[in-house]
Image 1 (tube, rainbow, N blue to C red):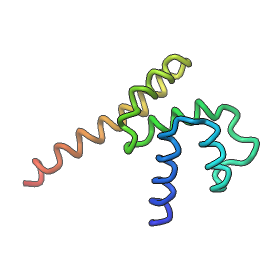
Image 2: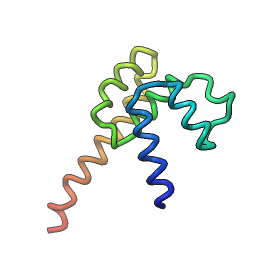
Image 3: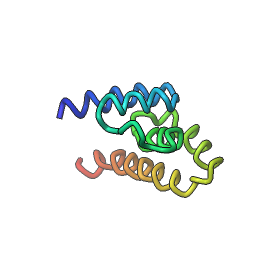
Image 4: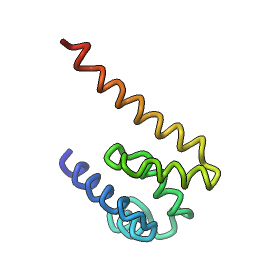
Length: 97
């Protein structure tokens, strides 16, 4: 699991730059994307930002970009998942005590 945690930390650091080409280079070098995929790295970048709980400070920016590019439904689904998970985690200690 440490390998995944290291990869995730590096990915989040690259996503925080908000540079689709830096993301593309990183994922190709990590063997996660090939040279010809994806066709829309900027869209993929914002979806990944929205999907990362570690980048919650960028979620509103991601939502705005995705909505502006016709991907509002997908953004809401991804971001709602984080909100629901955070609410469950917040209630958990009260239920355990």
